[in-house]
Amino acid sequence: MKFVSVVGARPEFVQAAPVSWALRKAHTEILVHTGQHYDYAMSQAFFDELGAPAPDYNLEAGSGSHARQTAAMLIGMEDVLLKEQPDAVIVRGDTNSTVAGALAASKLGIPVMHIEAGERSFARHMPEEINRIVADHLADRCFCVSPKSAAHLAAEGITAGVYVTGDVMLDASLHHRELARTKSDVLARLRLTPGRFALVTVHRANNTDDPARLRAIVTALNTVGETIVFPVHPRTRKALELIGATFAPHVLAIEPAGYFDMMVLEENARLIATDSGGVQREAYYFARPCLTLRDETEWTETVDAGWNLLVGADCQKIVDAWFTFQPPDVHPPVLGDGTAAEKIAKILSE
Ligand code: UD1
Ligand code: UDP
Picture 1 (cartoon, rainbow, N blue to C red):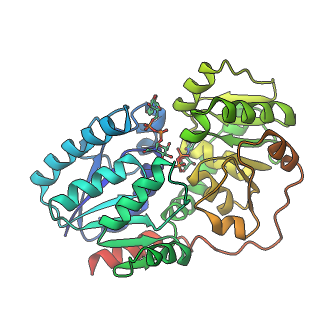
Picture 2 (cartoon, rainbow, N blue to C red):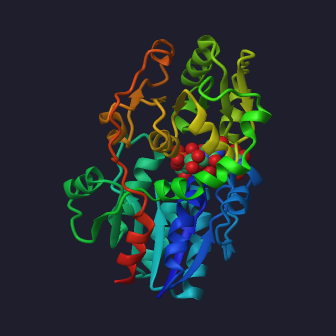
């Protein structure tokens, strides 16, 4: 069979690799990069490090308003699909690239396969929530991380073609972690002692585009005193400049980290604070306590397990939880067992 696989933003490059490897054992996969992320550190760096198959097409959609960016992707995607005539299109997650891939394919009558389906934050102000709902309802097959996600789909009437496979991001993490430990020198480079620093990421529109929320997060980071490594997303870099934010000397605001550096930082951090969906899950894979800088999360499994605490962008809550949040001793495998990509490839073959 012939599949067109769509990627465009940083987490999708990580998620795509295990599926590509599993799928290409028996099928043809054409990889389409929408061009949503384009800086070397946000895009090509991942293909170089992961040794993942290179994109066959780059639609070069770039940045823009939601409508402009998504429209550029739709136009480019339609041309590729008409030329390649695939048996199915694979999209993942909840980005504008996801929704563009799903919409272009379904309008051409090409079956849509959605990986990481059924996630819900129940916060419609998030562009990602709209993207997920649309992609799930257009999809012919929905691959879910956990029974919780399948239950969300069922509540919306989607029961056919739903499979619980686990999290492909866990597959990626398990696959690369040993190599990351060998290849990354980030601890030495930043003079970090394992277990004696915190790792922070922030990039959600809700946090970057609201000066009050962003200021509250910056104030909290400046207050806690512990060494903090903060790889800054380009969106956040711009937002921080706009509000004239400055960091205390214990906050190391660095360029976006490579995937191997990020894994080593996650594994060795005492604490992780983030608004990223991927980083919340990776915190869980590495059994690191996680403070989520949001008011809600899709990854409620990790909250229910006691390893993730929602602190919003509330300075006092963040500071209070920073040294007191203590996960339990038990750490159940709530995000799958690291074989999601193989399971997905097998189902796609059927
Ligand atoms: C997107 C996804 C989000 C995901 C995130 C992963 C949507 C609606 N959002 O958010 O779900 O969590 O990617 O990182 O799809 N920029 C650069 N260089 C780049 C990419 C972006 O400078 O390579 C800057 C541009 O100013 C751009 C801004 O970042 O306008 C936002 O980029 P965009 O891709 O629109 O959204 P993200 O915030 O990255
Ligand atoms: N990531 C990375 N470097 C960074 C920040 C994130 O390699 O500086 C990785 C992270 O480890 C995870 C993925 O990018 O694998 C998550 O992407 P991001 O946080 O941008 O998006 P989200 O998961 O929130 O959609």
